[in-house]
Image (cartoon, rainbow over all chains, first blue to last red; front, side):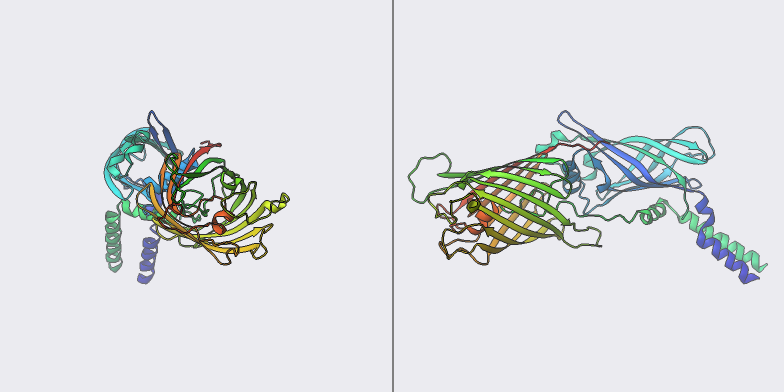
Length: 182
Length: 302
């Protein structure tokens, strides 16, 4: 009998049953970035961003492959990966953080701050991002936008091309989550 | 009682796990979620030429390249007063990406009035995720028509019929990006010339090209190429083509600077008919400058 109970406990532990029910994931999250200058407008979109939220712990994680960004011009894609973001060395950008004062049961739109660490080009910075969280049919949609200075992430831009690339890049995101099931 | 203790222990473990779980664990979980899509190496080389010869790179679909290739050299012991250099050769060309794998290109060179046209097909793409192909393989086939005689050099083909002036070059371009900085290529080459002016010259020639690039910054790389001819021409002495250069890319423009010993641009001409060796003597040392402008004819809609 005791052994049986221990087994059940083990089973519960390994399946991590309670954590699972609190987690929501998206595999088709959208992240886009924009660089507007008088010389050139550059924009790119990634539709394969992974993100997971844990509503009980109010945590969020985002991970994406840099070479999955789609540009209007194929040469921009090559330059972005080869010369600027160096995706051979740093294939992913990630974010991990907490949603401050998140109320999972609130059925209306709520605007919350997300505090966490953003890692791009192998450099990690603490950021605070304002997000809008919407609950639809027991699932969540998180959207928002923020700005990052290029120089924070040690991305080298040759002086001759400096007018083509904005000093501050604006980033937009939209994640539509579903229940996480392994 | 014992059950209760076990339950408490279990609860403790569970609590402990929960407290230790940070977003890092969520990130680790996401790492498992990446689909198993093949990841290919980007940009083994940047341009369609390493320096003088073709690289494994094909143009992306809808990309149209305008190319101006020039070479400058001196005539030995000349007392001429030409601007910059005694002689100049040029090739103007176009390249178009029919699909991401298939590229057509063509051009006209001033020296010998060579018209050339080629297709390049990327058969195998090197994977960057450690699985699949460790190298890229591109097939290259060109046809070149020599429209003029070039007086200082012997004419090695007959000029009787249209067909006499044709030649065909087939290359297997095999390259590997070893590190983000270093790529190397080996290019077995077969050249067929439709006619020979001299009976002792082979109509079919074989050569092996080796080339490499080393990136010294985000936008600048140092490149070198060498073509070894296995059965060279017999009627006059030829030397293997060699080039040492710097490639520099700027937004939509690619600039290639090089020192070389060959004046020609078309494969069959520069691989098999270079009449001088690579050294710093007048007439031998040739400075080359390629300018390539990239135009995207179909921009991806989002």
